[in-house]
Amino acid sequence: MYKAVHYINQFFAGVGGEQSANISPYVVEGAVGFGKEIEKLSKNRIKISHTIICGDNYAAEHPEELKKQTLSWFQEIKPDIFIAGPAFAAGRFGLACGTLCEMVGKRLQIPCVSGMHETNPGIEIAKKTTFIIETKDSVRDLKRTLERMVMLSLKILDGQYIGGPTEEGYHPRGIRVNVRREKRGSKRAVEMLLNKLGGKNFETELPMPIFDHVPPAPALQNISESLIAAGTEGGIVPRGNPDKIEAHNASKWCMYSIEEISKLKKEDYEVAHGGYDPVPATQDPNRILPIDGLRILEKKGLFRKLLEKYFVTVGNVTAVKSAEMYGKEIASMLQNEGVNGVVMTST
Image (cartoon, rainbow, N blue to C red; front, side, top):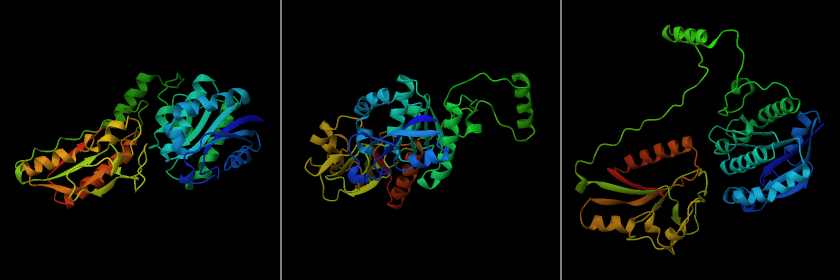
């Protein structure tokens, strides 16, 4: 029997939803939530001695404090393995899993296993130290994911050979290892080339990164007759953040009216964005979203009209695929509004 520590967020621990997202980390004895299923799937070969629970907001906004508060627990418990999540596509949950796995794997040399969807930002934090099982984007994939996490955990603990990402079902870690093959590399390369030239199926042994190319938009031909829109990924939202845009890994973008507004006032707007000092933008939201300057240019006739609403999201560790989706949705909306040009600001 192997001893494990398991990490879950407030939701899967049954503590509560968003209303409990700010709770600080605490540790309890035994398995909680689907930690019990992990023990069952391992046929009790993995015993979860302790479960660490933390609110998603706290973990995402205070990663250093999370590490400091949990390090001593790991040192005292001395688990054989650390199992985090799975987090699926939940960004804040994934960030917490990644943060703890990176610390435990790097500082304590304890093997770590987790599970995340390809869009989860936690992968980039922990992939060098952690085997992260590929999951679908929601908890509907829980049973299959737990089975694969348990299977891989036992292989690690038993000292068995761990195959590559495709064979074992984990996200590529960017780590190269030497393996023996029946055919040497030059022969395999020639065979792949011949298959490619012959239109046959082949699979490269070293996938190359794909870099997207976005052509620049054409210049406005007559800006004085143009409808201009304003937008930002800097998280400037009406006071109270009515749609609850997340400070990290935003799950949405929103539109808000600026009709009859000549400048953004600090008593009416706030910063929903994490990861940068919000004080200057809180004092004057126009520093991030320059509605005051655009109104002045509008009055001077530099362009015909400013769209009477602005779009906003948060770019902080937001997954690239999510950002691509938001961009397409925003572009479609702007086209429907007849917008000719956009002033979009960042932090």
